Structures are given as C-alpha cells and as structure tokens.
Length: 324
Length: 262
Ligand SMILES: Nc1ncnc2c1ncn2[C@@H]1O[C@H](COP(=O)(O)OP(=O)(O)OP(=O)(O)O)[C@@H](O)[C@H]1O
Ligand SMILES: [Mg+2]
Image (tube, rainbow over all chains, first blue to last red; front, top):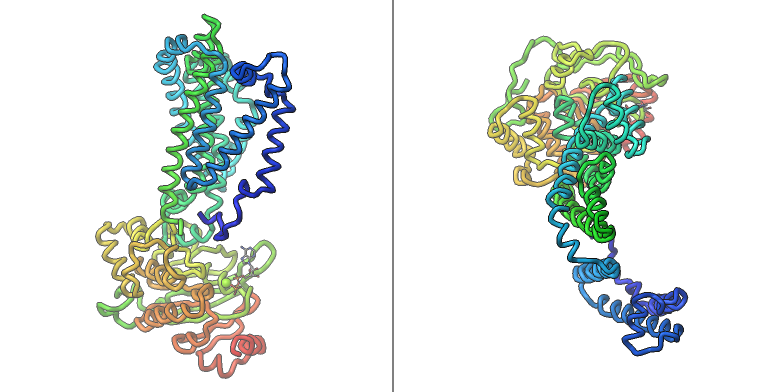
C-alpha cells in the first residue's frame, strides 16, 4: 500500500468540520427534494400514523430519520478495520440498489418462470459470443500492435487504417454493415458469426492501441540487452517484452472485456438470441418489460463481477516479480 | 591468451584464426541525422587485450562500442569481429553477437525473470542448450561473480552492485570471445563500485578480451593494456596507461584528465 503515507491524518469523515456540514447538507437536500413525498416517505408517514395532508411534517420526519441513519452508519463503519469497511459499504450499497429494483413492484412469479430460459439460452449465447470475440480481438490486437510498431509500410498502413475505421464507426453500424453488407457481395453470413465478427473487429481495434502502448512502455534497454545477447526478434517479443508489457496491458484489457460483455447486447439487433434480446422479447408477451430488464441487468452485473475477480488474479500473477 | 583453469571466468575458447584481431574498425563514420557522432575512427583490439576508452560526455564512446555489436548502425567504414565482417545481414549480425557480450550502465536485467532465468533463457534460446546444462553453466558463472545464493531472486530484490554482477554473469554464460562494458559502474553507489571493478579485474586477469568505457582511472591504470581517449567523435590520443596518465600529449586529453583526477 505505497499510496498511503505513514502519517495518521484524522479521517476525513471523523472531522467535525466535515461530518457536521455534510450531515447538514444531506438534511437540507432531503427537505429540498421533499423526501416525504417519495414512496418510501409515504410508507413511513402512514406507518407513523401521520396525516397524509401534512407534507412538511412527513418531509421533516424522513429527513431526520435518513440523516440519523447515515450519521450512525458512518460512526459505526469508521470504527471497523479497512477490510470490513470495504465489505460493509459494498453490501450496503448493493442492498440500496436491490431495494431500488424491488421498489418497481416486480412480479417474481414471472421472473421465476422466465429466468431459466434467460440463462440457458440468453446467458449461454452472450457468453459464447463474448468469449469467442474476446479471443479473436486479442489476436487481432496483438497482430495490430506489432504491425503498428514495425517498420513495414504495408503492415503499418493496414493497421492504421484498421484502427481508424473500426474505432471510428459506431459498433451498431459495423454489425449492420457486416450482416447486411456482406450478402451484397454474395457472401451470406449468419447472425451469430456476423455479431462475433463485428465485436472482434471493433474491440480488436481498441485493444491494438492498448497493446501498442503496453509494448512501448518497456524501456529500450530491455530490447538492447536482448539483442546484445543474440535473441531473435520473435523471442525478444514473446519472452522478454510481452511478459513485462502484460502488467500494463491487463487492467485496460479487463475493462474492454467487461465493456464487450455488455456491448454484445448490440448483436440482438440482427436477431441473435442473446441475453438482451430474450429479455426484451420475453417481457413483451406479458407486458413485463421491467422484470426482464432488471433480471438481465443483474445477470450482466454478476458476469462483470466474475470478470473483475479473474482480472485481479491475473494481475497478481504478473505483478509477482516486480513488486518490491 | 591466458588459459582458463577450472576456476576461471573464461571458458577456454579455441582461437578461430590466431592472427585475426578480436575487433578491427576501419575508417568508421556515423551520423545521427546531420550530426556526426563518429568521425573516421580506426581501432584494432587484439585478442586478450584490455582496452579502456575514456573521454568527455558526448564524445561518442558509447556510440563506438555499440556499433561493434550492431546496437548502432554506421554509414561509412568497416567493422570486423573475429574476422567476420559486420553488415546488416542477419547471419553477420547473429555471428557477431554470439561472439560479443555486453554490459550496460543500467544493468538491463530482465525484471520478470529470476537471476538464474536471466542467465539460462538466452542460453537456451540462442545457444540451444538444454535447461539442465544451462542451469549448471549459469550457476557456474554466478559463482564466479560470487552471488550463486541469489539465483532464485528477482533483480528488484538485489543491490545495484549485485545486479551488475548478475549482468556480467549473464553475458559470460553465453561464452563470448569479447566483452564490451559501457560505463558499468556509473549507475552504482560508491561502495558498490569496487565489487564490480574487482569482478572485471578478475575477468581481465583470466585473459578475456575487453573494451571498457569508464571514468574509473584506477581501474584503467591497473588493468588496461591501452587507453584510448575520444573527443567529439574522434580518437584523439591512445597509449599505455602509464604514457597516457603521466604524459598526455594532446591538450584536450590534458584538460580532461585534470577534470577527472582531482
Ligand atoms: N540516438 C541518438 N540520436 C541522436 N543523437 C545521438 C543519439 N545517441 C547519441 N547521440 C549523440 O551522439 C553523441 C555521442 O553520444 P554518446 O552517447 O556516444 O557519447 P558518450 O561519449 O557515450 O557520452 P557519455 O559519457 O555521456 O555517455 C552525443 O552528442 C549524443 O548527443
Ligand atoms: Mg555513454
């Protein structure tokens, strides 16, 4: 933890000069947005037996209550260890998000009926499309980065044009262009391969830049030492430069993977039965859009969390040698 | 050439053609853009010779020794290493780099590999040596630079002096005929300079052909057969250490020495 100094500065939230104005601001904000008129406020007001025609009193009660809970919460959490602070805060925020979803008055019966299909058909297709695209995009990015750093004019030209075009066009357009455009050339392509192709090309273009920056971040002394020892260019790249560049490449690449997971929903426009497509169509039949959207969102979130965990593990592996 | 015994740093290498010098540089000129960094430099390094190159900053010392193993290109002149003419052809460059080891000012160890792997990876990839044999050989040279116990560590866990000695062991593991050193002690704290110079002195005593760019005049006096003084891309003066240090002929060499020896 070299970001923290060895000085015990008073915790920001434990300073009265921050704590008290902060709570006052929260209190004021709650009054200003008339917290009493929200569904939560109404619920609370009626539970306390307050008249529905006394909005100011309801506002006041809700503001006091919420401010009190927050104050107590901060007071308690500040006294936990760092690790527990993180867990508690995480859990509280996740709970808030779930309560927010819950407040939509969802039909859990409907969700229960549909979630199986959403997972077996939708999630599987999403995972398949994303995984294959991520793999192809990584290969494209590797080739693109090496081409961009080469002194081969043709490779350089192709790589520059590629990143320019596929970073420049909206992904949605790329999907349409491939799915509808390729048949014009006499090559009929299915929806799933078209989607994979568009995602791979688009993310390959972004990742080319990530890989290039990673490779360029390795000091020139590493290249010189490899050359002086007689290593061939291929060995220098794969055994010396790339393993070091991985440290730089992995965090933004993880970002790209998570983004791609969700951008894969764009291929639903050409009728691929992935998660988002099913969420929309299944909801339509019984006018239960919100149920399906929220379910799909949570599934995306869980997948992203899994990817984040995997990324952390890989980062740790590549950092092993270089953390002092 | 001094024959290496079992404790020597230098494996006995059969002399390819006894009469050919280790390095032969003729009328070498190099430009960086329009700036001429080397001006018609000619220099021969004999087998087993210990050459020290000195001169003010920017005089072209690094550029000169880096052209020898093709880390820098050159526009005019000719370089031969063990009689092999250095061109831009892959075979020529590979052959030359097999014969020339190099030690850098900044060590340039591979930080993602352990000390042992730093030495064995090039051996396996370039010389095609088996893992087991590579490890034996690497440990032998790590023993010679007196840090075999650090073999499992990463470079970032070693002191500067230890890192530079690993770099020397890594270069020696490839069993080159010629060793180039570009200011090997300039990045080191004073108390670590000696351990690296001692290793180099030992290497010199065992007959390795060495070209050393350094400002360590004590080392030059003790070890060098010949000192070359460069200024503004030219070799201005050369001679034995005794001649050069006690009686420099050129004005530029004299003023350089007066700055370096306080
Ligand atoms: N890659 C480069 N591009 C342009 N000019 C360069 C380059 N490398 C070196 N030079 C120039 O060439 C000249 C010689 O540089 P060189 O590094 O060989 O000097 P040096 O004698 O090793 O100096 P120092 O003692 O500072 O290491 C300097 O003027 C330097 O600015
Ligand atoms: Mg230099």
